[in-house]
Amino acid sequence: MDTRTKILNPGSLDARQPLRPLLLVTGYFDILRAELALELEEARRRTQAQTLVVLVQPWAGETLPQAARAEMAAALRVVDYVLIAEKEDLDSLTGSLQPIETIRLEEADAHRARQLIEHVHRRQSC
Image (tube, rainbow, N blue to C red; front, side, top):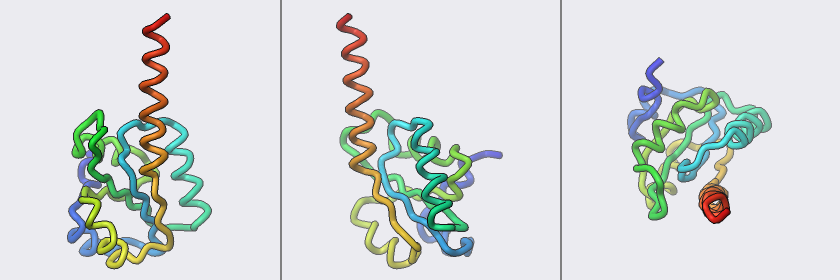
């Protein structure tokens, strides 16, 4: 399966009529680790969501461009759809998608990026 077909613009998601309840997860998705996939699976189970939508947001501290981060998020089996949007679009998307819950991962994503940078610096200074 070409996971890029999971990447949609916000208007085309409505046309697909995703199954409800829908879980919305926002973040940068710049550093993907196995723990993130497990967290997403747990959130989906806990909320009993039929559809998990990821919103990949722009980030000044990005390692990869937003489109590449969307492709990585789309490669996760637990993710049904990926949206690329601006931060100011979040409120209108939440209103139109009416998720059962919105999980914000921006802070955790930034923390994971800092951890990786610190790890690399420690390894290089040895």
